[in-house]
Image (cartoon, rainbow, N blue to C red):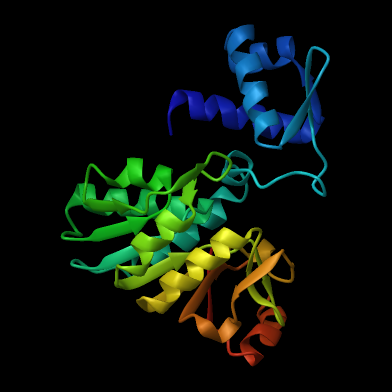
Length: 260
């Protein structure tokens, strides 16, 4: 993680506690100029995380806040890393993979990067709609970016052009995140385009895996992209009791928990 990313994360963590901050407070907290702080405030406002107020910024309540890659990336970091470590064990040399644009999948990309550097994985080809995954993995393996319209809030691409690319590629293994996992509604996402793309990739993949931390269970989101029995394995952390997973397993979900 770069120095600027660490500073942004520190600011976001503080903002979640304090709810509002002025330019001077934020500038002193993360050691950047007031002008740079204002630019970062503008970015948070543009992404729907917060609103600008006189001299500073205020975090929006959860109910009105848009999805934010930045905010999601600083939550449950150790859980996501443990899930990602298990997911990487499912990858073999010569695999053609799809990685979606979620922040748990980013942790998987980071774990893959370690494997590539150590030369314990080779000849892997990755298809992704994630700009972050592309930048991280392109120096180490062949990466095909499903180009399309860019969504800055998700750091990804979407739309008909991206779908055309995904329709033409057959994947050995696909790895998705989930915004919510519901016992009746299945695997869910916050927007139509993510659901459409995940559905396309699922049809063109030999095996489908979902990486989701335990907080995603029991929640509901806008749209379903797969029934629980429509994927090969859901990997989560041990923050959820086995008895609480029974309703999901009854509906055909195969779930593995990893220690954190």
